[in-house]
Image (cartoon, rainbow, N blue to C red; front, side, top):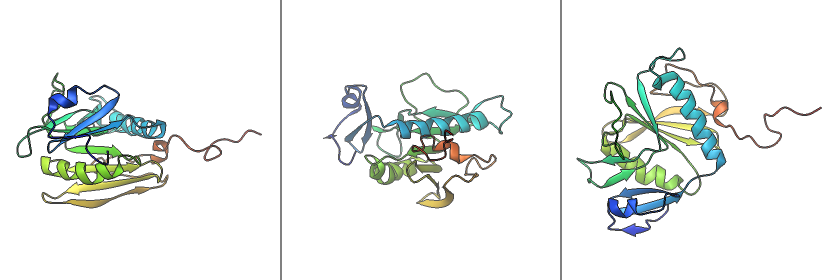
Length: 204
């Protein structure tokens, strides 16, 4: 996703693409990427499961609840940004008071309260620069940038003008991460695909 595959594109151009692509529309430019590899998918699945169990289930004993979580949903973000702005975060969350019911639609027009991007070499600059700018413009309050290879989670809060780094975590130590600091997570489980011989039982 270093450069757009098409400029002056519309949502119809995005829909016409094969389903093997993750496609986004930013300021009239169409960006595409293929689905990431197994390490990326494993990290995303682990984060989704932990946050879902603690915050997205209505009846949970593992956390306070109060959120809705959607994976790789199309965000169709309008005013005050261009109508045909389509962003696809790896994971997005809304407080239930803002999203009491998930609409039966192709995308979400309500900006999430929080997004998570699991970084990969082919999309990192796109996620960090282009997408973060438009998330902030669209009203997203919190953002996580997760790097499986570096085993790091960067937490950002938008102050209305800019993204401000708000701590995070590195390595395997348990962590509390805003806006979900009510629960301490074993983030070592998020780096699920360890290399051979690393944090794995040895055969006698």
